[in-house]
Structure formats: C-alpha cells, structure tokens
Amino acid sequence: MAGRSEEEIVGMYIYNFFRGIFNVIKTIFYGIKKLPEDKKNYYKLLIWIAFGVGLFLLREKIWSYIPQDNKRLMILRYGVYATPLIPLFYLYIKGSDHMKFISDFDEKFDEIGLFTKGKKKDINGNMVEKKIYPKYLSEEKEGDITTFSFYSNIPLEEWRFKEKKIENMLDCNILKIENALTTKKIVKVKTVPASKIIPIYIDWKDEYLSSKDFEIIVGENMLEQVKFNLNSTPHVLVAGETGSGKSVILRMILRQAVLKAAKIFMIDFKGGVEFGIRYERYGEVITERQRALHVLKELVSENEARLKLFRSLDVKNLGEYNNIAEDKGLKKLCRIMVFCDEVAEMMDKSGLGRNAKQIFEEIEKEISTLARLSRATGINLILGMQRPDAKVLPGQIKNNIPVRISGRFSDKPASEIVLSNSKATELPETKGRFMFKVGADTLEFQAYNFNDSVMLSDVEVAKGGMLTQNLDDEWEIGGEEDNSNLDNPYPEGPVYEEDFADEEDFEYEGFEEEDNTDYEDEDEDFEPVEDEIILEDVEEDYTGF
Ligand SMILES: Nc1ncnc2c1ncn2[C@@H]1O[C@H](COP(=O)(O)OP(=O)(O)OP(=O)(O)O)[C@@H](O)[C@H]1O
Image 1 (cartoon, helix red, strand yellow):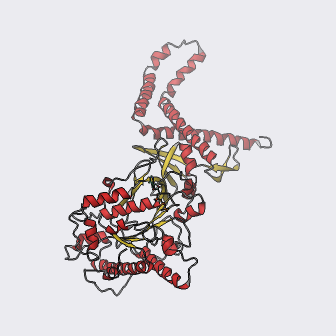
Image 2 (cartoon, helix red, strand yellow):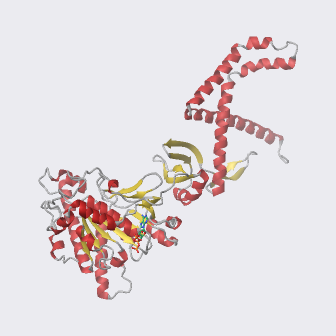
Image 3 (spheres, protein in one colour):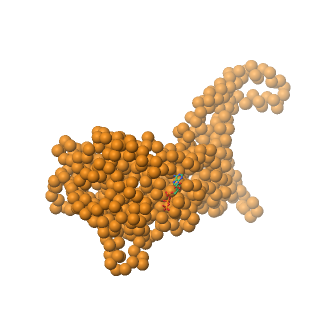
C-alpha cells in the first residue's frame, strides 16, 4: 500500500467492502439456483426456516436462561435479529459449494489451456490481464447422456480441437460439441460416461434395416446406431487404407439398397474384382470406362428429366413425387445408387495419354454434375477411396458429398482431405473402426461386419432368385417391377418421411468450400414431360460381364 494516499486507501476499502457484499449476494443467488436440482434441497431449506422462526418465537424463553449480569452473553440477545438470516446461511453454503465446483472447472480448463485472455480489475483496482475460462452454466441428464453447458467466447473449433483433453477432464466420452440454438456464446458438450465404450466387433443383421425412407445404418458408437438418410445427405464417401474395412461398409450399404429396392450400378474397373459376378443379380456391374461414361451420361439426363418433372408437379423430392404419383396416374420412380469401390480407378488422370485422359475427364464431369444436382431426385453416389488425394477427388465433387466415413490414416493430410480435420489419425487399429462425419460433428464408430459370401447366398435362397429376375427385365426407370417375391420390407412402397427445403443452395456445413458450384436452377423454359422416364440407352449397349 506504500505510496497510496489516505483517500485511495479508504476508496479501496469501500470498494472491497461492496465487492464482498456483492460476492455474498452472488453466492446466495447461486444457492437459490441450485435448489431445483434436488427436491430434498427444498425440505432442507424449510427445516432451516423453521429453525429460524422457532428461535425467534422462543427468544424470551432462551433469554431467560442467559444470566442478566453477564454482559458478554447478553450480546447473544441481539442474535434474534439474525434469525431471518439463518435460511440465507443455508443458501450461502449451497452457493459456495457451487462456486467451488465452478472454480474447479477453471482449474481444469487452465490445465488443458482452454481459455481466452481479457482485462479485469484486481483487488487493488488495477487493470490486469486475466485468463477468462468457459463459465459452467448447467448440466442436464437424459438416460446415459449428460449435456454440459458453458458460457464462452472460445470458438467451437477450439473446443473440438481439444475434445480428447475435455474428455479426460470430464472423465467421459464426448458425443457432440455444439452451440446452443439461441446463441454462439453457449457451448453444449454432450457426453456419456467414460465406462461406455464402442463395441470392437458387431455383425450386421438384416433386422437392423431401417424402415425409414431412405435411411442407411452403418454401425454403432458407444450409445446408438450410426445412420444417415440419403434424402437429406445424398452422397457418401468411404475412405480407408487397404484392409480397413472400406469395402465391407460399401457392400453393407449395397445390401440395404437392395433390400430397399433401389436400382444399382456398380463401377469396378478392376475387372469385377470388387463386385464379382455374384453381384450382377443386384444391378449392373460396369467394368469398362466407355460403358461407365455412357451410364453416367444417361443418369445425368434422367436427373434433368426428374428435376423438370418434379418442378412441373411442384414436388421437392423423390419421396414427395412417389407419394402423389399414383393419384396423378404417373409411375413411381425408383432410387438409383451408383457404387464405386475405388474412385481413383475412375478419376485419377495422372500419367495418362491424351485419349485416355479425355474419357476420365468426361467421367469426372458427369460425376460432378450428379454430385451437385441429384440431391432431390434420388440418384446417389456411394464412393470408396483408398488413398485420399485432392487430385483424385476434386473439391467440386468432394464438397457435394455430405457423408464422410474414414478409416484410420497415419498422416494428417489424408484425414484432412476426407474429414477436414485430423481425427482419422486418432482411430485405433481395430478392423472396422471408422470416423463418421455429417456436417460439423465427427464421431467414432464400429462398422458392422458384413460377410457378403454368406449374406449374398442367403439372399439367393430366401428370395428365390427374384433379384436375378429383376435384372433380366427390360431396364426401365419407374417400370412396374414385380417385387412381390422380393421379400421387400415395403410391400406398400417405401415410407417417405423426410421433407426438405428447396435445394437452391446445396452445400454442407462443416466442409471447406473449394470450387463449390451448387445447385442451379435448371431450365426456366420448362415444358412438362411425360410420366415415363426411360433410360433405354443404358440397357441398349449393356453387354454383361
Ligand atoms: N466392420 C468390421 N468388423 C470386423 N472386421 C472387419 C470389418 N470390416 C472389415 N473387416 C475385416 O477386414 C478385412 C478387410 O476388409 P475390406 O475388404 O473391407 O478392406 P478394404 O479396406 O476394402 O481393403 P481393400 O481396399 O484392399 O479392398 C475383411 O475381410 C474382414 O475380415
């Protein structure tokens, strides 16, 4: 205090006095806020109030026990005026527990370096630099899930970057870190206890098949199934080093597509190594580039025709269209899914001659158009990739693929290409362990193991070869397929629940925007088209493999 004037010292005392009062009131306020957390708190408060009131009512009796000649003890008589403070004392104790709980958080945030810096007045009234920690607001429990809310100026990216440390700090597994709907200043950390772990092996069972149109299930995290819906997130990228389980995931998706009666194309330029002859019963296995280009072009035309038709009928997507098609005397349209186990086989142009390059470029153009424009029309790309490479999968395509599934990569750039973060490097070396990302959140899961040699032959027996019969049919989009013996889970046609807004701007939050040419209005001079949209050409030069 050396060097301070008397006035300054008095000012400082007054300041600290009011600060102390403010802190007491604040602590009591926290105590009040804690009350609703447990019913017992109210009973305890009532006991303290009763105690205070009892003391007040019995004051004369109590005073009579105090010797009148003992001046020191006589002071206790004034204690009567403090009786209303007794319940406040209880609230103060409760509030200080809470303050201690909060300051423990400060310590923990300090340890993991999650804070911002700002200026604050110190006890002497001087402005000093101070660490500002996220402020604990509340925690809500729902079953196994606890959601912590913090008030914080720290950007969400930083929270996500420190996810592992926060998990250790809270002794939990984090499911999601997100902002509150109302403000970006509130961060919600959704957690499950650390004892909940991701299974290390789970077999796929057909009973897992979702009844929702067009929901696909790929595995489980520590709490629930991991799924996505092709109506709202239409294209999928599965990346993983050789042996990671990438092909197993693709085939498991294919299996669900078959059971949900989608039209399937499988592009396999390794001469049918990935999708062997057994897969031909489910759709066309394309092993030649010319043929792939041709089919893709036809799908682009089909997409355009569907877009025009949907616009003429004022429907937003395939689901809405199919719901009204029969009433309007139109044919139902099917979902079309294009599978490719290795995009590099289809798009890697490095080291190619001019002629070969041209066809690759054309394939890339068609894939890019479909990725951008086929969201509402039910034409989906399911792409596998062994070695993530920006040259192989241009940003224009990648940014329009909302579902990203990545196996373990030892290097960060590979993980960054797929997930836009380094989380794939944190995966354990467990077979079938993947990261799943739709939007901003990345979560770890165990993919179902799908043994296609068993499952495919099962289908043949159970379905009585009906899938093969479909393949023999004239390939006609929207044709009246005889699925009666297909053991189709949707004999009345798929149930369409999802509804999504106009697709004027089709991009996905959370992925870096490279050259993202989004959904454009198609053709303003639209003329209604006939209800039958036939891809005759696709079948015409199909030679089979
Ligand atoms: N989800 C899973 N659970 C347990 N084991 C799995 C799982 N997925 C794959 N495996 C095991 O790993 C093996 C390789 O899987 P898969 O063929 O899918 O790898 P891949 O990543 O596609 O490799 P490649 O690129 O060489 O084809 C499978 O034969 C299976 O034994």
